[in-house]
Image 1: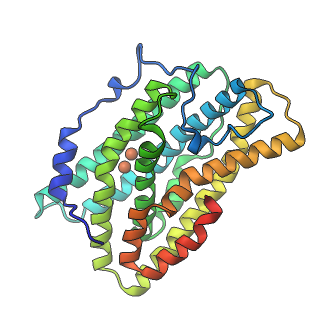
Image 2: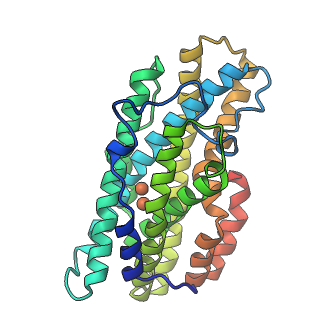
Image 3: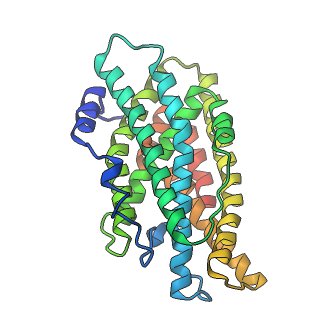
Length: 303
Ligand SMILES: [Fe+2]
Ligand SMILES: [Fe+2]
């Protein structure tokens, strides 16, 4: 892949960004439940014509809670992946070591950040929202694959956070300012992570046989299918949380329609936005052109 990424420039960019969790949430910095949290391009709830505007907003916020929980969860396996990649070579390239450890530190901060936002949400929302898990089991499943397989999945995940912010949040004046701040702050640091992920993958590919590369793409597919199973379960949880929060009595067909809308929104949010991301696909193509074609062929199921 043609790019000008380097450990040195990623580290320098990261050093210029310096936000703290306390700057974003806590004390008088509270979530504003009179506003939506997620951009409609990801939430996809407005089409549900049998819901009132108030109910659509509640469902949007439940999708927001799910987003906080989902990123909290995936970052649980990104952190050990990065630490494991850095560990065998802690001397030699000083920029590389510092950039990777900073990356790991930022991901630990993000886990904490998403957790704090989730606590605030749960304190003030007024009813319980369920989420799939436990995170340790999901982490264990994902990390049971080869480093390159995990690396490709992580690259997908990091690119989607950039796309979510740029396409749906940056110019959106309707969203809760605190939630918007969270997505902006996350995007600022993830912008370096995507570059570091690309560099890490290039290192892994340099030492991989063609069988190992084939295996890694197979594993990317397995991790994606596993996440999709979680997404299907979570879509049902989101609808259940909605019914609990609003007391709304949905007919069988309304419930089915709500479930389908949430599922479609979730698949686009976590899978489709990555499988159609140009930079992600460019890196895939540089490793194995046929893998790009395969991902592109599967993507419409998640868009
Ligand atoms: Fe992150
Ligand atoms: Fe990240």
